Amino acid sequence: MIIAQQKPVKDIAAMIADCKKVAFIGCAGCVAVCLAGGEKETEILASAMRIMRRLEGNPLETVTYLATRQCDPEYVVALDEVVKDVDAIVSLACGVGVQYLAERFDKWVVPALDTKFIGGSVVHGIWEEKCGLCGDCVLHKTGGICPIIRCSKSILNGPCGGSQYGKCEVSKDVDCAWQLIYDRMKKLGKLDKLLEIQPFKDWSKSRDVGPRRATREDVIIE
Amino acid sequence: MQTESKLQKLLDSGHFVVTAEIGPPKHASAHGVRHHAEMMRDYVDATNITDCQTAIVRISSIATAVHVKDCGIEPIVQMTCRDRNRIAIQADLLGAYSLGLRNLLCLSGDHQKFGNHPTAKNVYDIDSIQLINAVRKMRDEKVFFCGEPIKEHEPRFFIGAVANPFADPFEFRVARLEKKIEAGAQFIQTQCIFDMERFERFMEMVRERGLHERAHILAGVTPLKSWRAAKYMQTSVSGMIVPEELVQRLKNAEDPKKEGVDICVEQIKYIKENIKGVHGVHIMAIAWEEIVPEIVQRCGLYPRPKVE
Ligand code: SF4
Ligand code: SF4
Image (cartoon, rainbow over all chains, first blue to last red; front, side):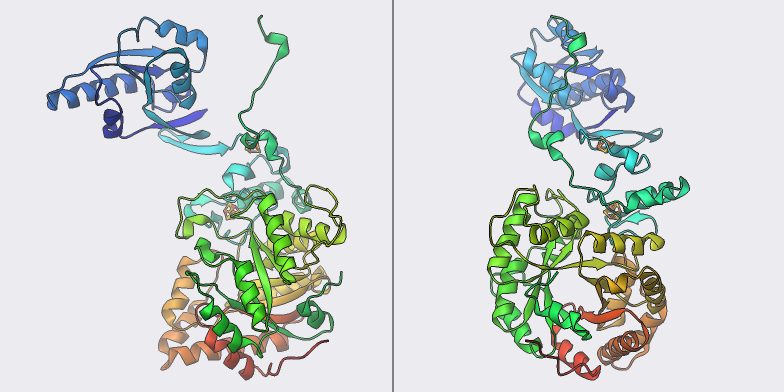
């Protein structure tokens, strides 16, 4: 899922400093699971803003709403009434949600979150990046461990000379992806696969080609 | 594959070669670089010119190499994958060759996190093995990385790579070295050796696979100025093993700088006499370039051989 984290409260406050009434729109998708933009976070943020503004002697009126998914027009339509008379919309979704709201409404729409990466949870409260969305998955060659995003240098023919004691040269807290790949391939009896020289990556399948689009002709409703 | 590199000629004719390293400065004058080059000229066969080492901005490797060449030393241009995509790399390779540079060392490069621009966007479009392979194809198959023919004047580099016997996973290091040689590396420079035992084990595995016969291996050494420098390498430089005895020996020394040079001379002599398959040394006197002539002399490696 997409992992996002809330921006500092004062930064969000600055984005809406000149507004009188603001809608805070959460999202029940990924950002709810990673505890950044679900119902609870939306309510807490709205009330924090109200309190801050009251203390400043410049009260703020808020409305809150939780969209099922902000990355789906179907669920954004439902917001028409909610945002009708606000000066700004604060989206607690990933960057996609913010853009969907901005597309639909002629309003000042701002992000409350920083969209970080796609990953999964390790234990409650800790998430790790696992995929770099490269558009051409090589996990079958690397024992199911992604060298594009989990190796700090995206090496396809690793490990580099900075790998030591199982850790990456960038930090003692980061596992060396190539150590993990090596260990796993060894366990699977497939070390010989790592001896093949992997060719250049086709980054045109990644975002380097410009924004991408995926189509499923068979399910498109005219 | 024969190139115009003097370094290759020396290695191919069986000489025990000496290379050193010149780090370009963090300003726009080549004055210091030229001074170091003049000083080393008669004592080394070629010098590496680092490419924004530890991700710190300096004069580019290619520009510095031209200054060094001007002073009469053959430079080895370093090319990292960190800062350039495949288009920029090839443009620089064509440029470097057109300027008369004949040796190329291919590396992935230190992560930008360590340098003076930790917030930079890194590139890593291709990795070092892919780079080696593509540079070889430019030369031997006369094609750009994309496969398009180079109609004339293909760059004909003597291709080098690095190996780090002190990084992990240890057992895979020799396999990775083989991969680099397979890709086209003709000479290999190792990371600084302080742990001789591990290096000997590494070379044993290299010989088992016959890799020393397929590429020239140059052992990396670094003279240390103080026990603090040794400690720093031991604790803060990734992929480096510095035995505690060495730190202690420098700590107990009356004249640590002299001791550092003594250690380095001992290491070179030991490697030359005892470790089969090593074809030269690469002296990385980081910010202590002045000491290189003395080390070379004391190891009995002076004067340097001449080639046509
Ligand atoms: S190889 Fe590409 S698609 Fe597969 S996990 Fe890595 S970044 Fe994601
Ligand atoms: S240490 Fe490992 S994870 Fe880090 S850059 Fe090198 S190969 Fe990649």
